[in-house]
Amino acid sequence: MKPVEKILLDLVAIPTVSAQSNEPLIDYAQTFFAPNVWAFRRYPYRDSAGTLKVNLVARTRRPPRARPALALVCHTDTVPYEASWREAVKPVLRRGRIYGRGSSDVKGFLACILSAVSAFDDASLAAPLEVALTAEEEIGCVGAKRLAAAKAVRAPRLIVGEPTRLTPIYAGKGYGLAEIVVRGREAHSAFPAAGRSAIFDAARVLASIERAAKRLERPRHTAFDPPHATVNVGLIRGGTAKNIIPGECRITVEWRPVPGEPPDRALSLIEEELNRLRRRVPALDAEIHPLRLDPPFEPSQQTELRDLLSRLGGHAPSTVPFGAEAAHLRPSGGEAVVFGPGDMTTAHRTGEYVPVAQLRACVRHLQAAVAHFCKG
Image (cartoon, rainbow, N blue to C red; front, side):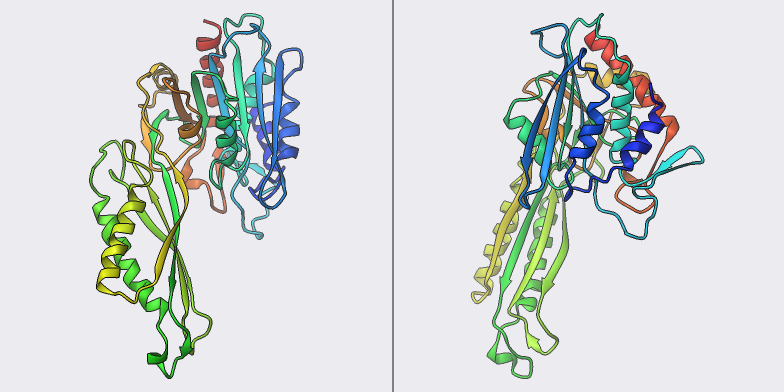
């Protein structure tokens, strides 16, 4: 059985930025599932650029024809990295930490899964164990949504990997994304009356978005910090030259709804504010185009899984202000917990790392959870 840190070093050395194929990593991961113990199925598809992506679902063969009791879920893609960061795909173990892209988000959890199953004995199982590896989580939980549509994950309890410092997470915010296109009329900047500035109108639109964001501060959900839905304008692109009245400006806006709130509520409020603006400024030409509406990760009525992980690690269950695949894969009436080694504050940046001590503890926790739910 390979040490979990060695498995992680191997995983990080396989680049899986979302734009790339994750098939080489899936090939590597599949070597840990003994064919006499595991049955597995691949769910391949091609993204919009024609790149091959692969979801993998593995399930223990014994006991046959029984419903799995527990699933371990992990995505396989990472965000991009700076070309100057040499350790990104040449990971190093230094002072008790493994540095590299995905070490925390979320190949560290994948290494823990593979370590836990590499010497797996299914002889004493009372119910099967399931493992699901997904593609393209970082760009919209694409692989998880495909598995959900195929009803490929059957277990009523899911441990979904994300860097939580081994704190069991029972709820998370959703995610919405839209682009607002503001159109003006180009003209020579010496003759502004001959045109209409899309950027000036975009400033008016931004004020409307800010008003919608203030309205989203109610209702409040005290389990979260901040305790309400949040809105961010992350990108503005407009104009063609310094001496041309800009004819178009594009605004990218995202929001994160809290549980109990529809994922399109922010969209509706922004549209309301835009309609008010149009009544004040009839010449305004602005359209909003929704790009993504992911629901929040709602708390489950069941708490056995989160309570077990809490007892194992000594961390009280908590929430996170970001989304996760749990929102898409948790079956009706089932329980999902987001959990894993590492810290999201060190992810998505140069110098990403995960402590080896957390990796080793996570392996023990996963083994204990499998014993509790699958061995009885």
